Length: 299
Image (tube, rainbow, N blue to C red; front, side):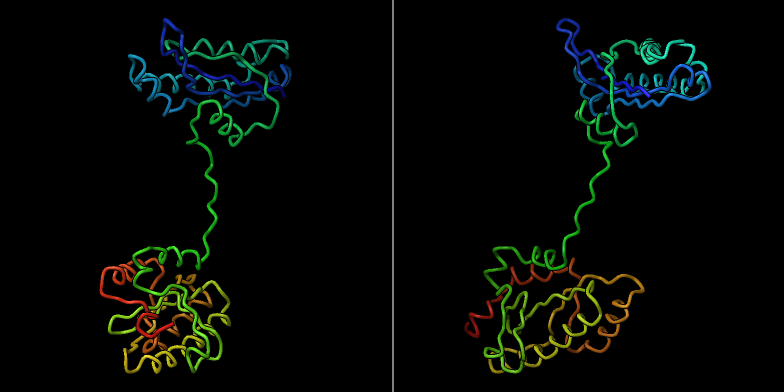
């Protein structure tokens, strides 16, 4: 199978013959014999809406002109695809089939729209390939399949909510307690944020994408931390609850079942907060009379 492509132009200045690349056509057909037997050509054709808007500003015609032209040429292409015998009548020689077909289509480009020079194309032909070529020729990437964005980790999302200068003036971020510093805990425990305003506010992340065993262990460690911190601040402040930022678990998952149990059993210890609502929490800390935990209790 031989394939050909050609840019489609719009002449924006008749004196200088300046042209704007408006679209692209890409097509291939089998040999003349296969065409005569009923194998349709493969044709991709498209005009850029963005470029049509630019052309409208550079010429004295409306965008509707380009829309109408595109539909008209597309109808001709559909006729060729649906009626292979019509396509095969253009030439009896395989080497000329594509050129003849192209000239046949050229007749339907009228006014400001014109087909460029026909160029051979080697490579696979499909919609994805065409949209990439279309973007390369016209600069219009609207038809490209968007790349899947890499999902950010829970810890990255949580950190992004805490990365503001005003907040860091009012709170300790990623503050780590050791057993020497906080009697009652058995291992170093980190608070993503800890601050004081009459009461101690201690924020922690709970990643519900982890396995249940990991989630359970983390909740148990935070419970130990809660009672240790509650005793530690007596006399200077008080601790009502820890704030636990979490990413919602998948529906009907084992993590969801465990989380629902924790909501009931740990309600007196933890205030659970969806991670996308952390900004409301940090906004309060940033704008109200909070102080760093280390300013009140020392390093």
